[in-house]
Image (tube, rainbow over the protein chains, first blue to last red):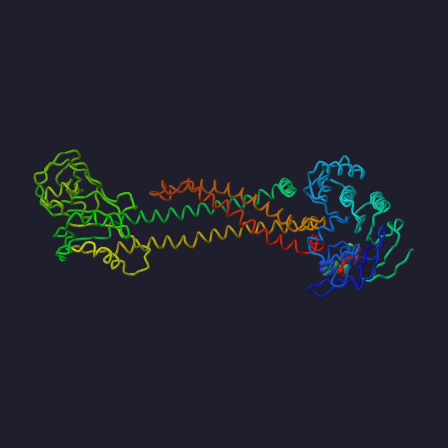
Length: 222
Length: 382
Ligand SMILES: Nc1ncnc2c1ncn2[C@@H]1O[C@H](COP(=O)(O)OP(=O)(O)OP(=O)(O)O)[C@@H](O)[C@H]1O
Ligand SMILES: [Mg+2]
């Protein structure tokens, strides 16, 4: 279970403070598929990063399975991320000098490991990238990059996948396949939190959270 | 192991970046090597060049008629030859190149000449230096330019000097000074000719007080030599001594400023490159952090590359710098190049330590800072 209590995130800039999250209280159950919707600038990425143990909130508590994410040390938080959370970003964020297999393996804390290598190749095949295993990101299409990113996200069998506009740079077919993979992960018992300003993801979602100016607007849909 | 793999993969992927980085370190190290070599060689070369201005220290008998000595440059009294050995056996002294002479004006074949007997030059213990004066063998005579010209002497000719048979071993070229009217032979031969066994008239030397913090070097020399040779007095040729001291000081000070400056500039240069490399790779740091890599491993990723570039650049830079020095050195340092300009393994060791160290230190700071930010912040910086 993911739990946010009175979470506030204020970005301090030279031109003044920007309140990106305004007193968010939220519970997401284990195994849920939640879509966070909202217009650009409403705080979706900020919320996702906060849940992902990648961004300190200004105040409030974020906990995952009773672990207070920002109460632990930097190293402990890094370990927690490695073991529990997978990410998919709109900009893919692959390492440019590693090929597909190595990018996936990187999540397993290695780039060369016989056992893990076999597992990575298997995953890559599942994601329809078999012919692309030894290509660098620069040689891949956007859809292939995002599938590589998803393979990397699920490689460690995380409990939670956080996806920020995973289909934002993809055409309809690729978008559908990415959503399909996330849905499969969800059906296998994983928790998925997906931020988007579109509506395509909602048919997979258990619940949609609407975000407006850093606040939760409503909790609609059962 | 993972990190080493990543380092090499990154290097292979960004070959140009790696080559430019190594090239910059190479140039910095080459600059350091060539400047350092130049600094050492020019100190030495200057010292040698300044020696050619001649001896600047004269030790003569206390009883010498000073008026006469200043007028003619010839002491009219002698002192014991052992004085030379006494001086030479001092280890805590500020002079070098000891040359004992016995000189007297004589009339030879109707010509006024200065008969000069030269003892083999000696150096104080542990300060072996190449001699500055002629080392004349017994039985040989070196004839000054005017003397040879006036008397029509040729080399290998055998002559008589006051009853002693000597061979003209050398007719010297014109010096424009008193040497042109000298006939020079071994000290022993001169002692025989003048019938002054065991006596010398002057000890000449070069002082080593160029870097002494004093305006009055002669008082130091008098303090050192006075108690040792009670029957002697010390003179300093001030013009020569101070020109020598000032030139050497100037060259040394020049390089004392330039060398550290070059070292620091090269260090900063290598450092800036390392910092820029880390700045360029912020997103990568973000990804690795997001995937749960600890700050230690990520810092190692950057330190590792910095060290590799540092080692490679230092090695090539050493070769290039040494090659430059070997190529251009002999044209600049005509006397000392042979001994001073040569590959120095200590400089290689120094570069191999300093270059990676500068690069690693410079990478360490921005990498550590990047690692303390939340990964989301680092990832945003695109
Ligand atoms: N590093 C930052 N410094 C200052 N302000 C920021 C920073 N990051 C985000 N913001 C601001 O916080 C607010 C929320 O940003 P966020 O990126 O979370 O929005 P979003 O919902 O993900 O938008 P989009 O759909 O365009 O991705 C915005 O007003 C944005 O300008
Ligand atoms: Mg966003």
